[in-house]
Structures are given as structure tokens and as C-alpha cells.
Amino acid sequence: MSPRIGLDLDKVVEAAVEIVDNEGFGALTLAILAKKLNIRTPSLYNHIDGLPALKQKIAVFGLEKLFSVMEEASKGRTGDAAIMSVGIAYVNFVRSHPGLYEAGFKPADLDSEEQMAAGAKIVELSLKLLRSYGLNERDAFHAVRGLRSLLHGFASIEQGGGFAMDFDRDESLRFTLERYLAGLKSM
Image (tube, rainbow, N blue to C red; front, side):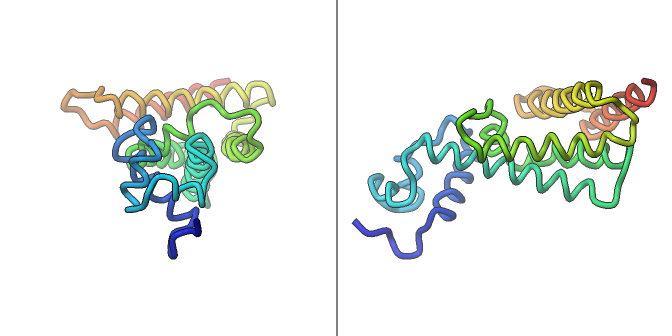
């Protein structure tokens, strides 16, 4: 069977991303994707090697998109300004793409060089941004884990319906990032 004219891997992934952002990463099935694309499910195999392969592509796409958002937020900034901008951009990415973030945040498939490389770019960017704090290599890696935990935790609680009090969440995020940065500077 030949592929549908106008349908390619990029369009399949784009449609899948819409599904995961609206319904959650776990809601993605080939049947739902085929229905969205107005094709029969077997036709998807002209473009992908099944659901696990598609989810892997979405995970890599999500990590690459998050990296791009973080990199853009850091441009022309260093120190506190860079970390603050990247932190806000990270949480806003999760707000805009909850399913895509979830896909990229799943533990890496150690057999996927693409996924490992995409995740490594985020770590490398984070380490680069933390250089101005004069941390040794070991402390810098701990600081990256701390920042990731802070941002992931904040975004996850928010996505789960937490922070229901009538209090500005962006202000809370800035406050928390400022305390994190104050801790780094005190080392």
C-alpha cells in the first residue's frame, strides 16, 4: 500500500503531538491517531514502525523542543538572569505542551542514541548556564539536578491541579527560583 499523498512522518508526529497535548501521553493510540488523520490504522505503518517507535519520536521531539525553548530564553543572558529566564520558559513550555513534556520527561530509552543526545543537550546547556556560579563539576551536576527537580516539581504540581489558592503562580515560581539562586551564590 502506498503512503497517502501529503502525509509524511512530520505530519504524523504533529498530529500525535496534538493528541498528547490535549489528552495526555498515555492516551495516544494508533487508532486515535489514524482517526485524527482520517486514515485507516494500518496506513500509519507506511510512516512509523508502530506505537513504541512513534512514542520514541515524540519523546525526542519533545526534548528537542524543550532545549530550543531553553536555549532561546538564555540568549544574551548570564547568571541569575539566564537561570530565571530559562526557568520561566521551562514552566511555560510545560503549560503549553503538557503531553509533549510528559513524553520527553519519561526515563530515556538507553538504546535510543537520539533520545540520549537530546537529553544531554539540555544538561549541557544547564551546565553552561551554571558556570558563572563557580561550581566544581560535581556540584554543578548536583545543581542541574536541583534545578530540574525544582522546575519539574513546580510544573507537575501545577499540571496536576495543585496551587489552587488564589495566589499568583508566576510570582511563586520567581520567588522559588530566586531562593535557589541565592543558595548557589552562598556556596
